[in-house]
Image (cartoon, rainbow, N blue to C red; front, side):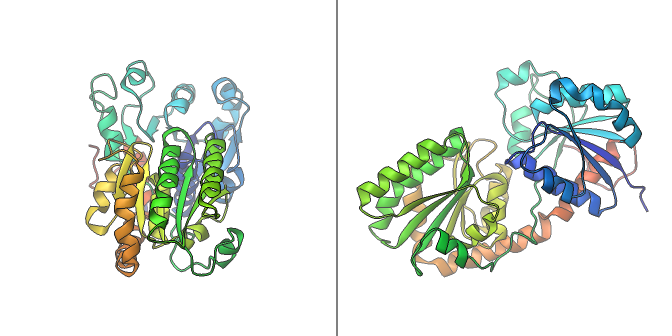
Amino acid sequence: MDAPLRILLVNRHLNIGGVETYLCRLAAGLTARGHTVGLLTEGGRYEDWAMQSGATLHKIGSLKQDWPRVLPALRTAGYQLIHAHNYNSARTGRRLAGALGRPYLMSVHGPRPRLKQLFFRDWSREVVVMSEGDRDNIRWWGGAGGRPIALSFYGIDTQRFRPGLDSSFQRTVAALPDHARALVFVSRFSNRKADVGHALLHALPLLRRRWPDLHLLLVGEGPERPRLEAHVASLNEKSGAVCAHFIGPRSDVEHWMNLGSVCICTANTALEAMACGRPTIAAGRTGYFGPVAPANFEAARALCFADHGASPAANSAEAFVRDLDPILSNLPAAERAAAENAALIESRYSIGPMAADVEQIYRRQLGQTVGTTSPL
C-alpha cells in the first residue's frame, strides 16, 4: 500500500469561486484516500467547508507578507509538497517551498494574457492545468515554455449534485407559478461572465413570445450584481410582469439547478448542473459554446465549458434564442441526453477520480512510483 502523503495547498482566498470550490473538493478527496492536507490562506466564506473537508487551515492576514511567521508550524506539520493555485498564490508558494526545502507545484485555473505570462517568474518545474484550453494558453516560449504540463480535471461532488432533488421550496422563494418553466443562470457575476446574464435578459422577451410561462432566475453574486439587478428591474417593468428574478447567492444551489428546465453555466458550475441531470448550455468568460450533449461533452470540457480557451461564438441573445427554442420544444429528449451527461460525470469526473489523478501527480513530484499516466 502506498504511504500517505502530507500536502500543503496554497491559495490566497477562500471566498466564493471555482478555485476555492475545487480546493475544498480536492481536500475531501485526498483525505478520503488517507492523506493529510493543509491549506495556507487568508480565509473567507469557505473556511468551514474546507475544514469539514478535512483540511487543516493555516490562516494568515496577508499571503504575500505573513507567510514567514507560520514556517515553524508548517515545518512541524511535515508537509512533503507545496501546491499553489493560480498566479496570485504562486509567488508565495514558490518561496515557501524554497524555505521549507520541499518540492513546489503550481496549478493554473484560467487563461492569462500573454504579456502577463511573459513577466511571470513563478512556474513550477511541471505545471498542472485543468483543461486543454488552459494548456494551450500557457504552452508557448514566453509562458510555461518547455516545461511538462500535466492535464488534470475538475471533480464534482455527485452526492450533493444529483438529479431528482426537491426544489419546491426554491420555487416558492422565487414566487414561480406551479407549472412555469425556468431558465437558471448560475454564476459569479464578474466581468465577461455577467455578459451571459445580460444576453439572457435580452433573449427572454423573444423566448416568451412562444413560451409565455418562461422565467429567468439569476443565482449568484459578484461585482456586476448592481448592473444585472438594474437590467432585471428594467425588463420586468417593460414586460408588465415579473419574468426575471435576481435570486442572489445561495448555499442550496443544487436545488436551484434541479428547478431549471435548462441551466446556463460555465466551468465547475456547468458540471454541477449536468450532474443534477439538467439540460445545460455552456456560456461564460470566453464566449458561447452552446448546449452540451454526450456527443460534444469532451469538446466542451476541453474549453472548461466556455471558461478557458477560445469558445466558438460570442454570447448573444440571438444564440440563446436559437438554441433554447428546440430544447424547450422537446424537453424529454433534452433530459434524456442530460441523464447521459450525469452518468458520465458520476463515473469519470467525480471527486474520487479527481483526487486519484492529483495523487499521481504528487507522487511523480516526490519521485515515487505511479501508474501509467504521464505529463503532456
